[in-house]
Image (tube, rainbow over all chains, first blue to last red; front, side, top):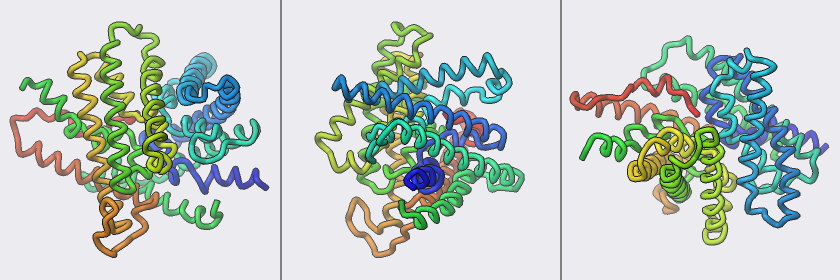
Length: 196
Length: 216
């Protein structure tokens, strides 16, 4: 049962993007086309899952050596390395996807969502840490999937919005943010409903 | 005052990181702008980190090899944030708990990284420090505007002092935050445009950046 709560939490109730405001930059920047949104979402989910796993294990090591203050530094360096590895792998095995992602692939390093999940599973984000490795991996995956859902929905909305006439000051980011506001209102329903 | 000095000094406003460059969104939308106390604290933290990281990276710009510059910047910024985080935890524990995960997330605040990569690595210490300060102040200003609206309409208070009884909880929550930012960006763009139009001698750097700027 707790698995269901965890997954629903990551997907909807505590959705990183529209409820907790984590992972906004790519959400706003890359959601113009549904294809790139899906690609970004999958890449981020992948990085988040692995980062959650690795950071959880490394945190255990840091605790044994009693150097927890290095946690933040270690986490961000792990994430940077992961993204670099993925970049190399992608370049070799799927050059078309690599080119499609362009600059947004290295930018996953500065994606709040990835560091956010690393902080969450190691208990530095205010909530208790994950009890074991499996919880950490599922948390990473669930929150990543939540990010994917949010970014794809917004891409779909933006697709339609771009075709309408919009007042000049609102073009670009303001109208995107207003769409995000409507999405957030929808997600508030989950918060009230499940009260997690 | 030469042009570069003036541009750097006013950079926080003409190229406001939040309203124009659209960076550092995560913390701008979050609890950090829910009320004015949080906003000023968060703004101060980011200003300190940006100022110091710009200074350090500018000092080391000739020493750091190009191939490892990204991890180097990460180390500098993460160290600064860790120290500030510990300081907050020790001396401002309530605020530390309120801001929660957004303090470590200053490390991945796009503003700091963008300024390091875009400015500090190519400019001398003086200009880099000034840019860091300017961007930090610009960010604080943006956060202040957000918090002003969100607190005044969401809770009816300003800095905790009750101003009126009119409360719309919407502003304190996620949707209100998105909406406030949307309206503020639109308003800021209009105001900046009006200022540029009044002074024909000022060279306007591509105003269309609002629409086509790639966020990091």
